[in-house]
Length: 159
Image (cartoon, rainbow, N blue to C red):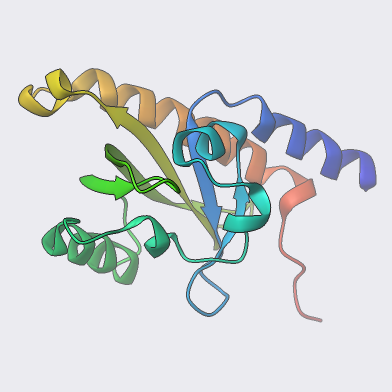
């Protein structure tokens, strides 16, 4: 079983876009995995993000309506894509196109939520045609789903 766990985790490490996995079964949906691209984007270390809710990236100018859209999507167990003004560890703001999606295990139960972040430039913010961005998000979500559905990252089932 250890080899399967390692191969599933290696699959996650091959994903080149910034993403986190959060656990909806734990209080406050903490981050349980953050890839290197996420750490580079935000300026935080793995030790600083694991176990925390992603709210720590929000700041005074983060749009409350976008946050509510995320909450509503989680409650309805559906995917959403929102533009968010987040803040790096050093306090610098950055625009982030977040795609949040439930990720089901091989039994069909939601095991995690994957949050894929795409850094937006000024040109992206002005351009409302986000289809190339959406395609990148969907490809990353698909790769995460393949890794999660592998036997290595299944949640233990109660006896």
